[in-house]
Length: 146
Image 1 (spheres, rainbow, N blue to C red):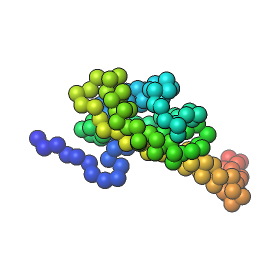
Image 2: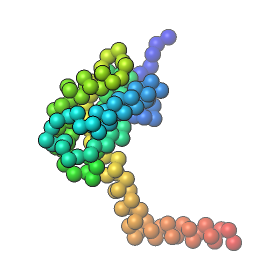
Image 3: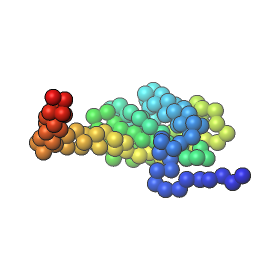
């Protein structure tokens, strides 16, 4: 029976990831969060930053981990991602030591843009035009109940 691989931009998203991808992604996320919280990476660009790791997406073959990071407060984003990418060989080795996989996945770091997107949506919802629509919809619903 042939295997069918989904192709497209969202093939590694959490919505269609296998249970195994999700589980291994969480293992990698926890291991990396522990490494960063212990201050094991000695890089001037990372010192003074608390880095959150909200998500790790694994490729279907578990050989590539895309790690989404965000420095607390959002400051120095580019410098932090560059420093993490510069130290990825060390980080990959540390992750491999902490989790039990047949192969240590290659890792790449990306900025987690969900916070920016959520803020953009919040701003849109607070605009006068949207507030007017919300008030209008609420008013219509109360008229229907009468």
